[in-house]
Image 1 (tube, rainbow, N blue to C red):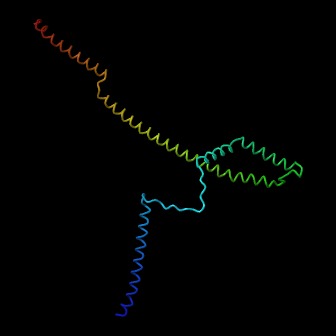
Image 2: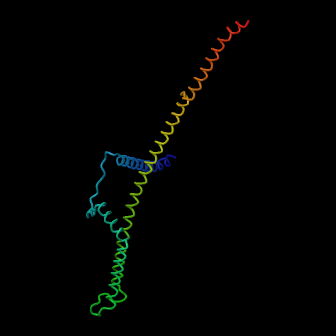
Image 3: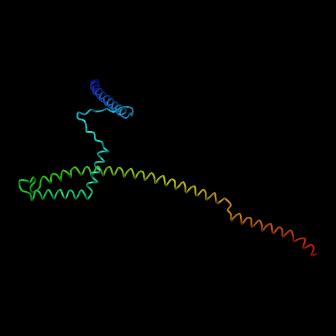
Length: 203
């Protein structure tokens, strides 16, 4: 029994060391996460060997929008059609020594594919900027509608309170009817006061 217990002790020590190592590792990870989560701790700046090119997003976006607008006009289509017709006509009808792109016009195809490869990202960039503007405009419209709805509810409550207050105020017709009733009551009282002497004289 003693030998078995002595054999088990090293195994327990190894297991305890493993658990201690895991606990320390977890504690270090928790401390590192807490340090990174703090707002007053600056981030680690990694220096790169090659600097990334800095481009002004607004200027490039404006250029992309202008380019996309120009490509969506009839003038661009006319210019492109004339360019392609002149290119094909010259390389088809000109003398052989003056041609630079014979049939099947591989250089022209390469130029048009290169133009399309640059035009597609520029158009997508212009669309993204337009989506951002539309999102901002929609948010502003939503806020304006919410304010207008709140103002309308406030005005409706105020009008309802004014109606309730006016319902308790005496109107002109009500005053006239009350005055008429008072005048009629006073006349009846006067007539009632004048009737007894007449009856006494008749007896």
